[in-house]
Image 1 (tube, rainbow, N blue to C red):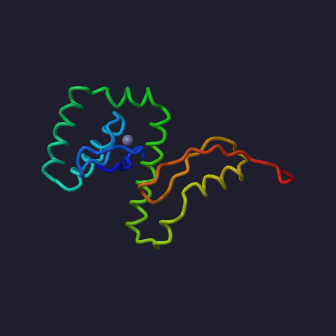
Image 2 (tube, rainbow, N blue to C red):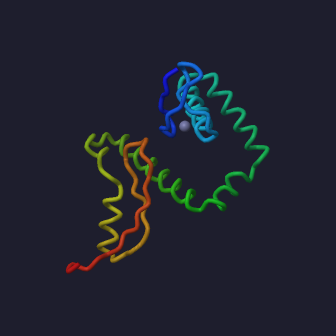
Image 3 (tube, helix red, strand yellow):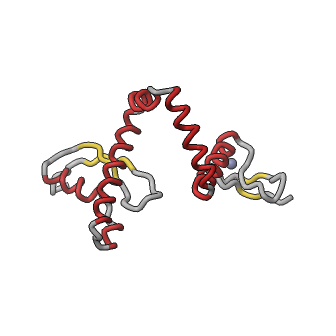
Amino acid sequence: MDQVSCLCCGRLFTPRNKNQNYCSSKKCQKTRKADWQRHKIKTDPDYKRDQLISQNKWLSANPDYWKNYRSNNPEKAERNRALQRLRNRKRVKYSQHQSKSDIAKMDVRTQSSMAVNSNLTGQFWMMPVIAKMDATKVFLRVVSKGY
Ligand SMILES: [Zn+2]
């Protein structure tokens, strides 16, 4: 069989059958399974419900999980809080029927101009208003005009 490139890492590999799109590396197999599950949850309401039930069961057996996760991953917790704030704001926005051109605006514009105006230097999250894209962390520093 001809070599194909892995959907995850892009490396060429020889598939065992024509449906194999991921190479056999552990990382790519993990990605394949996660992708499959995401798709299944979107398309199969029974599967989604079962997953939710088992997640809740697991969570009630591990009540400190999210608390520990947040204290072990402060960066991710900060990012999630920022993204949630954005989602909350977006929900309000859409319920007010604002124009579609707002979708393309990057949230960071407000934050960066704020940084310049108040002479702030620091780290900011650049967040695309359209979903699917990852937030990017940037470091903004005020530079004098002559620079
Ligand atoms: Zn791969």
